[in-house]
Image (cartoon, rainbow, N blue to C red; front, top):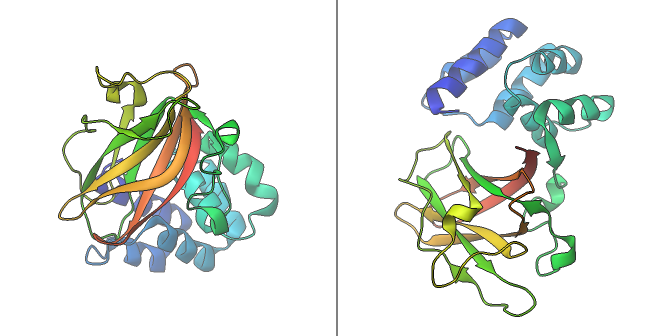
Length: 226
């Protein structure tokens, strides 16, 4: 979802909720408000039940994932939101960074696709590549020289099959440990330090949400179907 479509979708949701304060936040392009701020505003303005019902009836799973990530005490709505989002795994907010047991390959989640999302409100453009190694015979990363495409602006995403990053001299293999590394415009290439296991047949996407600034970036993640 690009910046304009995301803003239009958020505005549509706010109008359905009759949430004028939230709509004002969305329409203030100078702030480029992130999804968490939008959802928290709507939650306070119209109440949890009305907000969740509207999200579940919307056309985009984006808002369901956002509610799970940013709204506290979801309670009985959790199962329906996970189904709407196609969610396979979402770490706790306290453990969102580096939460999937780095270096413990037996516990890694199988994926075949990476999606990088640049959260609204951050201060950089970016693209991504992949680091990978084959356990247990190698524990040093191979950095792919292939990138996901041109650097994109905030509020947008890039999605690319992990197999597309394989290099002839160091072929990517099923079972390899993989990690997204974000190429930040005007800043360093920044490893996310969130590890997964590559399985071409997995049909799961690891979405890495990028936050922070050019020199101090941080990341959270989820795993969804497809």
